[in-house]
Image (tube, rainbow, N blue to C red; front, side):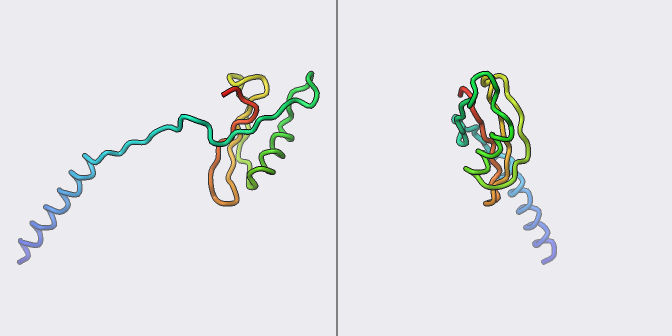
Amino acid sequence: MVKTKAIFLQTFVLATAIGTAFSPHTSYAEEYVPYKIDMKRSKPEEPIRKSSIMKKVRDKWPGRILHISSDGSGGPDCHTVKSMGLDGEFRIIRVSCRD
């Protein structure tokens, strides 16, 4: 009886391990940017300020801003904002970028 349980348990563990190893785990990157804000300069000679970017992001998606950085590859005023919404969702928001 004990040997039967041990053999059954070993078979179950082996089947679970093999099933997990060969099951398809594929992740796909999103082809579009789901969170995006377009902003224009109030004065053409001055860049968009980070404080105004933060206000615009907080107005649209209330929550905490974790990080904000400029991204020169998307244009002179392009910024990437990482935030945690009040709903618990982590968002990466592109502001004034040419995407």
